[in-house]
Structures are given as C-alpha cells and as structure tokens.
Length: 362
Image 1 (cartoon, rainbow, N blue to C red):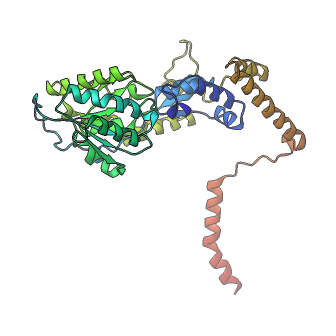
Image 2 (image 1 turned 180 degrees about the vertical axis):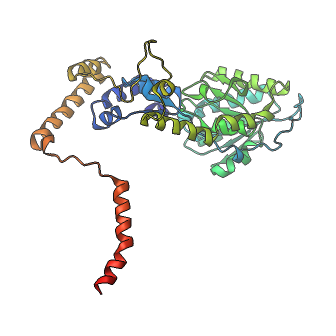
Image 3 (image 1 turned 30 degrees about the horizontal axis):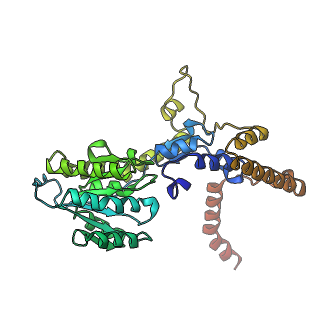
C-alpha cells in the first residue's frame, strides 16, 4: 500500500491505483474473487473505492500471542506512581520519516522540559537515528534518553516491560500490531490518530493525538498525569488484549468466511441481511464498467494523472487485442476439473495391488 510508506492517510493516490488496477490482469483477477479479507476498516474503505460490493469484504485483524507479551507483575494492582517517581516512555520503531521520527525529535525536548521525572527508552534503527542522536547532544539529554539500537522481536517484551507509556508517533499505519503488544505488556499507549490506529485498542487504553508536535506533547502530558493520578488500571490490559486478539478468534472468523462462500452458512447469517430491507447478497457481485466509462473515471483523476492513466489503459487494451488476434482465447484448452480425491484413491489401490500382480507373473 502506498500510504503505508509515504502518505499519512489513505487517500487519492490509493484510489487511483485501485481504479487503474481494475483494467489489469491483477485487478480483473481480484474482481473475480468471491470474498476479500482486510485488516481494518481503513483498508476496507480503500477496497470499496475499487467498486467492489461491500458484502464481499470482511474485516479480520491480526492476532497476537499474548503469552509472549506478559507484564512483569501479571494480575497484581500496579504500585501507585508518586509525583516524584520516574515514568519511563518506550518507543520501539524503525527510525524513518513515515514512522514519525522527526515528530519524535521535536517533542522529546519539550516533554522532558515539562516533566523532569520522565525518561525515554528508544529501540530501533534507521536513517533518522543520526538526527535523533544529534538532538540528544544538542540538548544534553543523554542521561534521560537511552538509545538501544535495533532489537530482535523476541527481545521486544523485555524492553516494553521497563516502561509505563508506549509512544507511537507514526504518520501512517495500517494496523499497528506493536500497539497491541505494548498494551498486552501493561503499557498505556499514546499514539497518533492516523490510518487504522484508532481501531486497534479501546479508548481506556490509549490517548490519541494529531500528527502534530503540539498535540503530541499535550497527549503525552495527559497520559503522564493520568498515570500519576492512578486513573488507569494498566494491570488489566493483558487479559483484555488476550481476549480481543487471540489466534483462536481469528481462525474462527476466517473459517466462517470460507463456510459462507461455500454455502455452509445461509446468506442471511453470513452477510447479515434480510430480504425486503434493501440489501441483496451475492458471493461474487462486482460493479463492472464499460471501457469508455472507465476511461471517463480515470480521466477525472487529475490534470496529469488522469491523462497518464488513460494512456496506460489504452496501451493495455491494445496489447490484449493484439494477443487475442495472435492466439485467440477460443484456441486455449480449458483445464478440466479432475476428481482429485477419486484419483488419489485409485492410485493408492493400484499401488497396494501392484505387488500381487508382479508376484503372479513370476
């Protein structure tokens, strides 16, 4: 997804790509699928921009093995944090622009100046690591910010349990599995409201901020105040995350989709519609546009982008026409649907009977 790397929100560029893909073999193949699975509603909306039926899309999030992300004192109420106690903020991320490293560099000095009893632990590597180290030297913050460098995934839990707050300043995020892992470790999460992040955790586990310096500083200060006033029961986060993001639940929801496609579940139960209410369910309903209609849609995508998309589509269609003239589809053999199970059974029977036949000839 383009927005996962360059753009803070799913938007026009993704819509253009999806619209253009509907005239390519990949797009046509995707449109012929019976059902689509997405990680979150932000990606679901992007898929719907490709003129797919809403009933063809199901949202099934990623899962987390909660047992691998346990808090230090599981099940016990946390010790009250006094006004002079140290609060540690953990950041585990790739140090790239799209992950909000520039935003992190701008906010750390302001947070530490407002809260002297706050410390940072930053794990990760990337091209922005040099800028982060220069900021620490410029503001003389080496004693308050610990740089761990890259850490392996099996070491993430050991880093997280050292903190109280997990700060996630990303400019774009499709789902944010690290947020679930942090909450499972008993950390209060401060994150930017971008992409699919608002869907990941309930409100009592998070404080949201705009991807702006002032708002992120304000949200972090709000989280620090909430912890010092003991208004947040982070000791309950692990059990709640364990129930929300279990692999068993994900497997059951995925199995239900396959059963719905195969017809093992009634359309009313699978699609959640009832006759007479304006919705009709179909496993493969797709909006199909004529070529001229698609060209009109692409032409309106932008002053230059629209013309470029139309040119690509016309060239693509001409290639298809030439291939059709060179080798018509009527001359292509269609693969037969062989009874695989029966064939395997016959093969096993022949293998079992073959020694007797060999013995009889000798």
